[in-house]
Length: 274
Length: 274
Image (cartoon, rainbow over all chains, first blue to last red; front, top):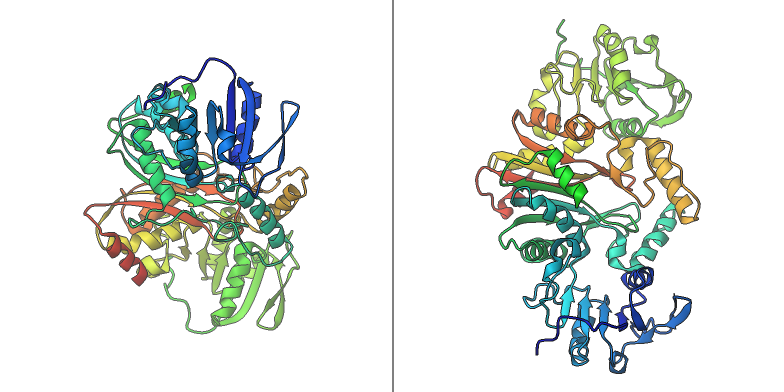
């Protein structure tokens, strides 16, 4: 059954799923900064992270283990706990007539799920069945550059290489980078447990599974999600995704081939405006 | 006057110019490892680094300030002290009928100077007037990949993004990265003096001067040197050079467009052979 695309026009009961993680913590901060209209904020986590105290608008909230009861009367669920968790709780969320805004890759390529970068395709947002997805972090950066430039001349081909910080691998990976770097500087051996190798003064191809076409999952996310967001099904795009020893903020080197000649100054102008 | 292209067939009197630097130290190690036929090794340095003791084949050698007298009767000078130093001493070296193998960018694009990657264009080496240059570190990596693949099908266009370690900026920059990272981990402010910004858990575009075409000098070195080494004057090549917080070993993400279809398995096969 198709839901109303609109959220009710009153303060909302909101849950953050994955509230103790790196993305969850940022989400909570931003909800406070923006003074998002919230009647009640429910912080959900795994059993392992249950009981963590988080300050929210001068209140102390406690993260709770995710159970069916916690979803009662929710209006909005912001999920960033991985694809399997989002899939697990989807029907419970839909049953409550709540809207799921999902940061995992679980539903991104589902044709009934809008995949939104607000600056690029905000108008697609209402066309949902209860789930709105947001893209992979690297896709967001890429589309923010491609979408305005595509107005100057149709983009034919994109070659992108990423310089991805460890924040995308979660809080534990960030702690691991700091710890292993300290061990390196002290001349002690480093043993990685969260990421496949030590990132201390090191880099390696993105740690997602390698697919049969010799691109890793992260690289194909960039290809498929960018095509969907820009609505160019046959966009030629090749991505190389690399983890670098940076704690926060991804970077990308992007080479774009246009249908017509685009002057660098016009491209720069368009990017400044956007 | 054109020199004999051959070095004399006896142990040589060799000088290392820039012997106290990161590259100089590696050079000295390799000369020892390879048991290069040397009658006398002269370690030259700036006034600042004079008097540094270096172990060479169970002898203790001392770096000496570079003066005209030090070049007397030399057969071979290996220089890695920067372009201005190489230029300053060139006529002195030529006067001694010695051969300069230069690691700086001073003579690389000079048409009378062979620019050599031994695995790629070793046969060009004899065609010299007293100077043989070796390319920029990033160019070497790139041509080692492009040269064998160019045999499969003519390379038309190359997009390369680098992940450059700090070793290329010298020993002081390496020390600075370790120091600033330690300060970051201790929660102290970081102030860079060798590089323009702190590289501690950070990255930035290569620190060479920006040119009028909006590529930096390092990026244009890759373009011009690669064209010369591969002997493809009109090769389309675009490079983006980035410094990453890695101590040693550069990495590159390379996208190649061939004239004909090249199967990934054939490309891999060719690279394995090379």
